[in-house]
Image (cartoon, rainbow, N blue to C red; front, side, top):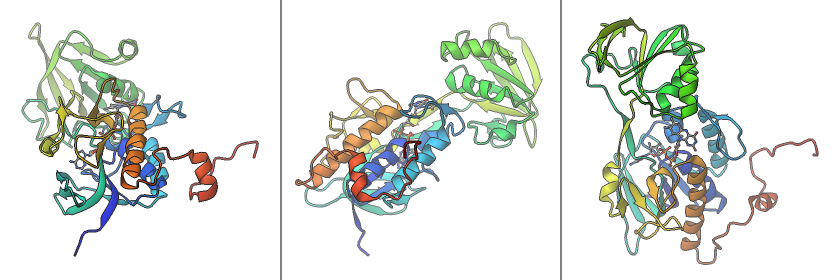
Length: 342
Ligand code: FAD
């Protein structure tokens, strides 16, 4: 059976990929999105679903998972095809035919592609400590998917960056005890977050590392060593949350013939890569002045999708028009916001 050719296929269903789906749909293109994770939302759902984001236009404060839900609602009105748990392994452009995307499950054909793969396939950095691996999912965690799990529990958080400290502050009100241990004597988090942590009820230990994790079926205790004095202390712990960063890898993307700078794809101001009909947006791209933020990434998605449209259809303008005016004639399936004036 011949594969169907989509107008625009997005690799990566993080916030940037989802917004690209929306914009492609708005421009009347047949859209597909492919993501290796079992859900859309990228880093927001995988790494920090319950954390609040404060710097998205129009949302003074929004939980990451709620932002993803709103992005999905916006994009799904155009009925894109969504392929989850499918990793794109290869991308090939053809001078006369569609772009070919080979995944670990099948072949996808697209007239144009936006790569929105974020930081690539990301894996949490692990501790080289005996029994950590054995107890993963049994008290050893890399992500917080459900805060309720930590209610009235003793938690040890390892790390000195924003993730570790933000989670400490979020869990203090629900856990019975929070201990933060960090191997350095300086913090790598925002100054304000450090101040809040030091003023909180958390036990804070710098220059300290996990020496051993105890427990057969579940984490029961952790031995910590002070790396300056060599002094060891044991703590009864129910959960160990490791927030010591991620190892990111562009993986197969490096072999697709793209111009790569560092760990990112080089794009021009139209979000074009060096390959024809292949655009990129979001955390995966680099250009002078690049900021890795949701606000800027979603803007790049709009630029990429509108360029893809005008490249495929020479009669189509690059500027999409104002959505406020388009919607008056298109009758969208989303419910308009009611105001007192209406
Ligand atoms: P991602 O969210 O990384 O999504 C990329 C998607 O591509 C992933 O779902 C991945 O599975 C998929 N993918 C990768 N490779 C492949 C492949 N080969 N095949 C198929 N799928 C693939 N930003 C802000 O603006 N404000 C904040 O307050 C904020 N807080 C943050 C807090 C934390 C703890 C972290 C870690 C990040 C935070 N960020 C914040 C950054 C923000 O999350 C990123 O800028 C944003 O997620 C980038 O979106 P993206 O769609 O480009 O990439």
